Length: 428
Ligand code: HSE
Image (cartoon, rainbow, N blue to C red; front, side):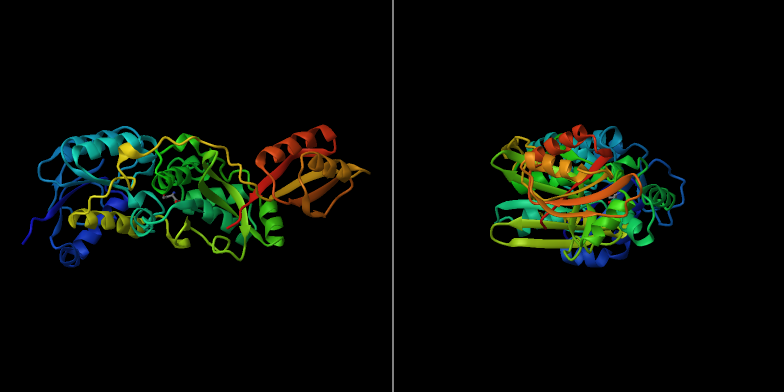
């Protein structure tokens, strides 16, 4: 029998336990497929005594993940602790320095330190694999680095945070406010310990930054992602958008244009009949566009024990089979530093505002749009009371710069009360 591949697992939360379960349940299957046994040698977590409903008695227990990473009896350091700094980073660096391959689910760590870690791993002849860091159980990293390796990628797009998609679809289905559904999701344990990671779009932006790097051969640049979370999305906008045939999604879009690398994660309107528009609950969806393949759509569970452990095990199996793919699909030293560009690809916009119900108010708004070179596609005034008239406008394609100019002009008209809502309508 060939040498077993020996795993050291750091982190025994939902994902870590999921990995242990797969290794225990599918030992024979994994060994047959890989041509060698996959074994767990040692594990590490904060609490040794916590009941995890899984048998860990065959594995060495190590309190310190850095010590686990350095052990001579592991080949692969599996990092499923999370966190961009501290133990996860220290232990990953220690693993690379002591000749271990790394399989990680840690999007924050790689989004912030991916370039340095990849360079260190490649200099040491080790691999870092991170399928589980992006879109949970969906094999999107493999799709880009392997299946689509013959394509020039033009755009990567998707819904990559299940919690946000759950909140937005639940608001619509139950007719509830953002605040009510946020509280509900938090109580159900659907949100990260720091919910801002989810609802602020940060978690999804980490994932987008990682996919951008692979897609465009650029160094991960999380700080350059234009970021807007879902906290300002109202049930009113969800209803009005639905009435016009759209859904609101927290959508990530990355594309390389002549101006540079555009990366944005923000609420967008998408047609309700599109695959993205029909995405319900905590499911993720990623669309990849390449010059040869045109577009592929990947859909599946973006989080949870089984899906995330499934992605980790896919990486473990690749290592067991001897696959040595560069972290971001090409040697880390060859990744270019991209010029970050503000999203400039024109798009139609959905605008909602409250106007004073007096003669000429609408004309002033139409004038401000016209002055900014923005053409109106559709317009509707609805449900006005004695003083205020809610108005919806869908523009023809325009740039965010022109729109910002018009929005600034709206203020000086003196007829708009409160802040207008402006949401991009994405062509998907
Ligand atoms: N909170 C994340 C999500 C988990 O909802 O997608 C996976 O990153």
